[in-house]
Length: 139
Image 1 (cartoon, helix red, strand yellow):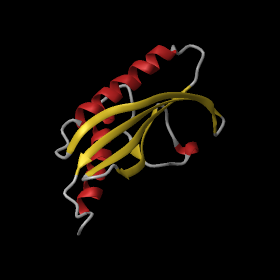
Image 2: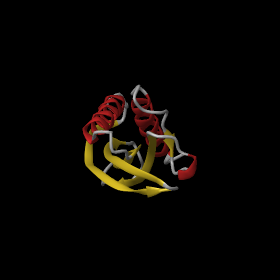
Image 3: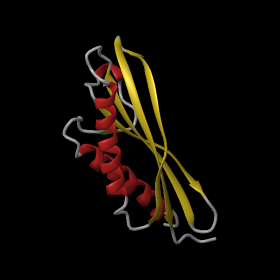
């Protein structure tokens, strides 16, 4: 299969972020892709693939999100939530660094969102990862 390595490298990047975030004791086990907000327990950890884009030559760029949803409460300091999200992002990065075809890994953006879902006040800390891989694909 011509593009087998492309999809395999994407799967490995998803698995790496899931494994890294899953190693943080303060957070729940990650899930991949969208889920029912009403069924979530907090803090919820989501790995959300965004795109795979051809960068020319044999380089492909995988863009993925690590979304961590916290329940907003008055007695919880945002900095504690940021620390947990940061620990998950660092652990995910460490896992991404082990990928055999990756040659550039970086955090593209960190965003915060506040809102309400299923009657729960939420804070989302979203970390975007950018992973460039070199694949041996035909021209």
